[in-house]
Length: 135
Length: 135
DNA sequence: AATGTAGGTTAAAGTTACTTTAAGTTACAT
DNA sequence: ATGTAACTTAAAGTAACTTTAACCTACATT
Image (cartoon, rainbow over all chains, first blue to last red; front, side):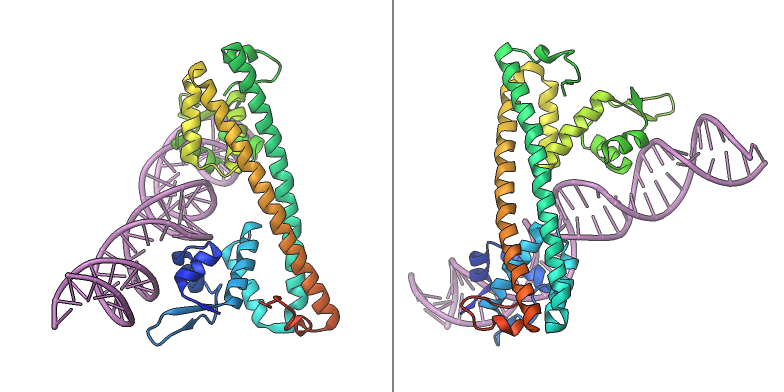
């Protein structure tokens, strides 16, 4: 299957502008063009985008993703390096999840803080309590 | 306790430049200055920064965080609104965690993909297998 | 045949959240 | 008196897009 940039945008949830930007940055090498210069995305391009989105979600910068894309072009020689990259990304995601779980606890405290303040009618209910500072 | 910008940077893990930027954006109102114009951060400022970092980690943009800071200045009138904000942020964090858990599964698949390719000596081991596209 | 509209194209400027640089001040130790 | 460490501001640079402007091309409609 082949898709126009608009169809590829709809299928991936990435805007057409961003797809053009990704191509310019070397994340999408070999995107075909028709006689009028119009891009034609294939299923492999969409799968590539799925992996790009995945790497991006782990906090990987575009330039590093580009390096990974370049490694892919090297074929079997870069298998080890690519494997190591994904192991590293797995660790990064796990760290991010742990971070967010800590953040959620702080938010839970704030929810409790406001709930009790609302019940009391004033934030002053927390004033002076050891270490609780109103901001 | 009072801290210079450098000490505040060290205590919060936020660079001095970023602290100046936050002040300029209205995230840190009423930062004291000495006769030479040098900033002096107090514990309440540091606590404020902790909450700012927390909101930022949930994906909240600076301008929205600024609106929250402005709400704080309104006192008890804005308790409900601030409570609603944190409930909303809690939902946002939970969504992000779920997102990352899905991302981790994709990464796990890729780890398996490369592991088996390395064992086989070539990525071709996955060729043609239903839906597995090498990128 | 002309005209509208729904796509596509490029290059360049704008945005967000910083970071870096440049140029200068002030306090303190050698 | 000279160095250096920490502060100051304003402005330029960066990443990852997004938006805008100006243009092309195909196709349906008046």
